[in-house]
Image 1 (spheres, protein in one colour):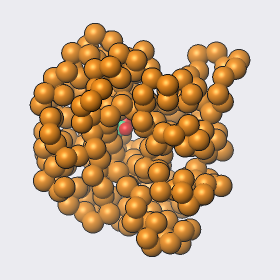
Image 2 (cartoon, helix red, strand yellow; image 1 turned 120 degrees about the vertical axis):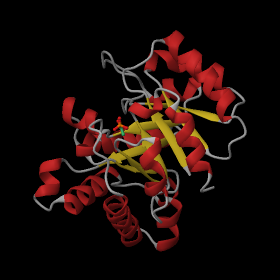
Image 3 (cartoon, protein in one colour; image 1 turned 90 degrees about the horizontal axis):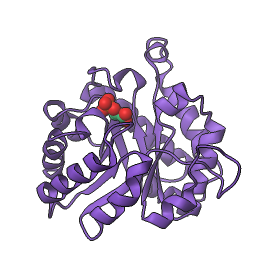
Image 4 (tube, helix red, strand yellow; image 1 turned 45 degrees about the vertical axis):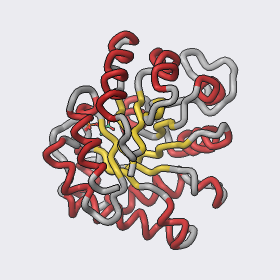
Length: 249
Ligand code: PEP
């Protein structure tokens, strides 16, 4: 079970350190994988703050090259060196606002794995795609392309997040059965692409307007292994979410 907080472009370095220290105290001893994904400028300091705690550090994005003329970008080598363990990749805001393609995302997934970190690969359909009955088709295509060329060993080290775009930051959360339907589909696809044993080893997180009052129902679904949380990861609600998830461990 994993709960990951995607802080997006929120919190200054000082605010991030303060909040992380609060979380360390409130979440101490929880037998969960808890991942904080702050903005890039906070990563170095948070790596120190989180050292020897039960909280892990994640980044929200990275480039796939080691170094070079890519103004404004951050490489996986840089992230690894400061102690980042997880990297979110293919988030819908990166796909839709910054035009990231599945091919580009696949290169990042490989680079993250090559540098010994865990990609959290996000997939999910838009409202229009759902209304046209294209949900499974979109998710399958994003997964096939995002995971293209990965070895079995690499698949074992990946995390998938199903994040319906219509649920992200909208307050409209997927109903537990709607999320389970897609999670079950993803599990079956992994089984078809690899095998049953491997399909069970890949954590599949749900993301999209998670709040303490809707979290339990989602997490009670058989193929939902945790949550990727945006808005509710920025305050006290994140502690509540971790407590709820710990009932399932
Ligand atoms: C996200 O951005 O990954 C997300 C799930 O956001 P929110 O929880 O705010 O919908």
